[in-house]
Every structure is written in structure tokens, then in C-alpha cells.
Image 1 (cartoon, rainbow, N blue to C red):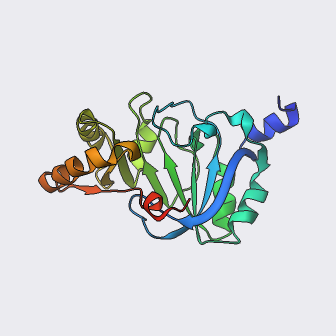
Image 2 (cartoon, rainbow, N blue to C red):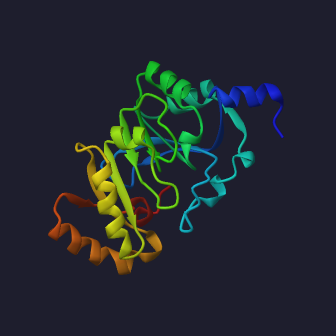
Length: 210
């Protein structure tokens, strides 16, 4: 149980439940292959059964950390900082992104879009989930739509999401890792027949890096 003082700091985004932070190569989507510092924020109620970071779901397991400390750590490593989760938009991202921008970082987010958009972002990767659909603010501002393909029905979901996202968003289909042998050939065929889409792979898992 957090003290009242710390809870107030969390509520206004001055402290965030930090699960982990690490410098690596972006493995998915538009920026695949580029160096980035990842900040993983705890807390998520979207509940994807195939999530590979379920330990991020319970925010209470991850200590509230000041945004000043998070920014100081990030600024030692990379010009590009990726905020991910969990679901980072459960929290107010305004202060974190302001301070990262003051340190001349390019600031990206990976989000399900299930909560309204807060923060100042250079790149918004929207990866929508069926059980908690994105808010209008994220559809309107996403630079990238990345839909995870677990089964054939997900192609229908992908097209529904492509209709809702803004027309400038770049569209990606990515196989869910445990189904990659089955789904990757279907995605390849789908993209060849529907070339508005691109293929995304979790290349960091092939490279055996975080």
C-alpha cells in the first residue's frame, strides 16, 4: 500500500511504477533494427492471454520511481526512448515526456490505446486489442498500427482497426510469437494481396536480445 504522498505523485505522473528499463535494438514495427532505450511501465488491465510480459500487469509489484530518475537513466544511453508496458497510458505521461523532450530525446510509445492519450510523442505505435478497444485520441494520432495475428479472425479485426485509425498511420501485421510458424505464411500471402499492409516480425526474439 502506497503512502498518500507517493500516491499523489503517481496520480499526477511525477512518479511511475517502473518495471524495467534497458538499452537494446527495437525489434518490431516501423523502427525495427534501430537502437532505443526502453522504459517499461507496470500496470495493465487489457489482459491479453498471449501477453509475454504478464508480470507487468500488477502495478503494485513495481516501485514508484520519480520521472527525474527515469529520465536521467534514459538520457545516458540513447537519443530514442520507447515507453512501453504494461499499458503506459493508464498513467499520466505528460511530465515524463516533457522532461524527456527537454533532454532532446525522441520519445516513442507502444500502447493498446485503451486509455486517452497523454504526453508529447514523436511516434505512437498503436497495437489494439479486442477486449479493450482504443480511444479516439489514440486512433487519431497513431503513426503506426500494429495488429497481432493469433488466428485467421484477426485479419478481420485488423481491417476493422485500419478503418478507424487516421489515414496517415502505417499498417503492420505481426504474427503472435507462439503461432509464428502457422501465421507467418498467412500474413505474407495477405500482405501480397493487400499491399497497404506491411509485415512486422519480433526480430529481437530471433536475435535473442531483450
